[in-house]
Amino acid sequence: MILAFRADFAGDRVFAFTVGLASMLYQAYGGKEEFYLFDTIEPQSIYNAARNVEVAAWRLANGRDAAGALYLLSNEPAGDPPNLSFEREFGKLIALQDVLARVLAQQENRTLRRIVQQIPGVFLPVK
Image (cartoon, rainbow, N blue to C red; front, side):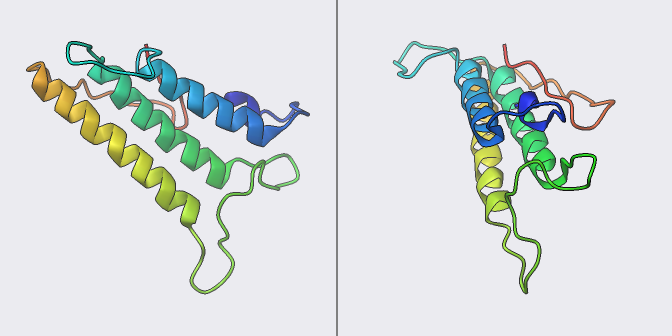
């Protein structure tokens, strides 16, 4: 996802962003597409993935090039009321990851470690 917000990147930013987001979530779930009764998922990875989606949504709304133009257009702030449909969709994705991380942590009698981000906009490891 970082590639989509680099000033020197000349490729398809939407593709880089979506592939980065999808692969990060895929890795957070242990690289599995199917889960069975005795499979386990690391709750901290899911929690970190939720925080990374928050960072990604923030970067979508605020990531600008040297000329001040957004790298990727997502929301439409102009208008009354503003169209924030991407914010809503990312909010749903974040909430789903948070709920799953909490359920997994409770299931294993563990608590999630809170990570204090010193620098805003930093992606966290998912594995």
